[in-house]
Length: 272
Image (cartoon, rainbow, N blue to C red; front, side, top):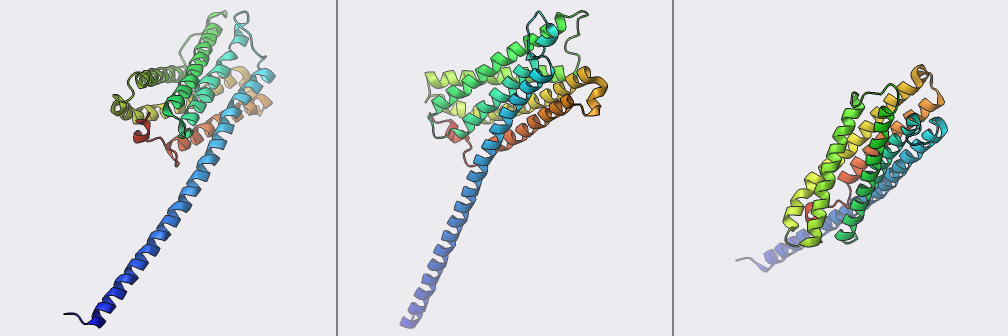
């Protein structure tokens, strides 16, 4: 039997424990709130930086072509027609594809059907740019005398691989989107299981596109500028700056897509 004094002491001790536990919980909640706020600020900052870099890549390639490569032409001038190739490939693989991933990543407040539609539209624009860009470089090799061989460089091998990955990604994503429209609830588990693989290969494709672009820029600069490339000519500075912007956009995109408070996880992606 415990005396009244003992019971009072035990009650006071339990009250102290509860009070300490509540204070510790409040401190934890405050720490999590501060960490969450910091993560959100970092997310918004990385979104702005990535968007600026994607826009800068397109602006720089346009500036380079207009100021140093003689603008644009079609089949009547294959050498100038080639200028469409870097413009459209950067516009498709990096600009359109990059913003497609950005929009899908940040628009968590919208209905999934609309986000997927916007995601698909940007990828469709990418395909149009890539297809025309491929045709222009084909003409630039075929319509000159003597003809230039196809698919002999590392740049071309990387480009073909990237195009293949991009095509597979688009087919899988588009097929999933059609299933979403037809039988949304019945295919939720299947679509959710595809999300991690689709997202991972999407990032891999974007990284390969950036690497391919940098290889192509270096190849073009060496062929066109020759010895002047190492003499810090104005054009070489523009080309190198474009490459740095593309690499920076790639790094920011990978960080943006894989981290942050608004990641679309498998559970979220399975919802309508």
